[in-house]
Length: 305
Length: 239
Image (cartoon, helix red, strand yellow):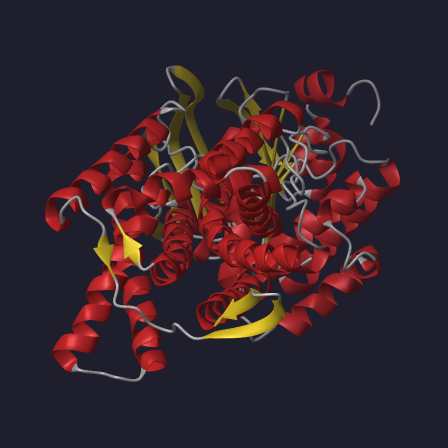
């Protein structure tokens, strides 16, 4: 019971991060039918932006309030990551729209490699550490020395995720921008016939997805305390798995898939073998694609016309 | 007086296949103009070409005195041209209300409630279905929604592509009556594409016949109704 509870907390924390990244995959797929393979690396870059911003704020400017620093770091990471993703879409994907279907995906793989290599050269290949922060924990249970703890970091991660998802849900469901976004997802030509600037809406989709990934990146950095140029790949593919598991194109599905992948990974590590945790997560991808390609909350391809 | 919509020598291609071979059409303010023709004549292509998707490769299109041939689709529509397109293209995963909100985006929010009420007067069924998903509506209801969505933009020109397609005669009558009322009471300018030539010609002030991407005849609706060629090609076999 105590191990279970601890893993549940850890899994939900990790799952929040995956869910935030997965939304970016699923939104982009929903609107232009493309898997943005560079999204994981955008997430990695955001962690570096967060790290740099954190170090500047604490050492150069000398801010000491940890929550103020965290808030500024989040905003800075969101802005720069949004800009990065906007640029990528303009440079590498938009010119290929209307080309054959695989072209933008190949371009995305190229962008992914470019980002990882750029960070490797610019920041060095080693792990970059973040000074320890928010290290306090709340002990929930103490069972003969095995403590079930809830770290402050985990509270922050889950709290920020919930708040962000609430805001995001409102944006998509209730605002004109969100409506235009959903309209483009269903029928781009009709959206244009109603005066929607489709290119702009697609750009905004990339920016919003990247901003959510930026929050995930800062959270990831804070949670693990280190980041490295290669960290876009595995979390990126796991978040993609989460999007597929939840049903690619479905926003609630991305969040659900993220939480499930986080839980599967942590429970697998606790009860079976930590070495094989990635194998477990990726097996889910293959199993989902074979037996349930529409995912948990996805819709079948065919629609009534 | 210059026409509200003026299409001059427009040629449109799909790849290398020519769909419109030099079409001239004019629609004046306050008119109902119809374009009739067989399946594949290029009627829907002309509607979409007016909206810039696909773009005319030759010729020019002007609206309210402004050349719109090269404008992107969304900018053309923001000049208050609205289209209820072929196949209706309702957003199936949005509610009826949201579909109407999408229409209102061009018009701005100030008149939204008034316009919504007008649509309910015109098509009371939409009020009953307001919170249902567009995809669950019947064909006739979807057609009403497509027209209402176009009207929510407060258009100066309404482009209607085959509003009668696949609908029961009673529903067709209801929709055509609604168009006539809007034209009479509000002076709405309508450009209507139809296969259902009899109804369209009776409704329209003026009409064009499109054959294989070319306009072959034009005149008032009444004149064309009397022409033997029109009768033979488009009106035989009942209506």
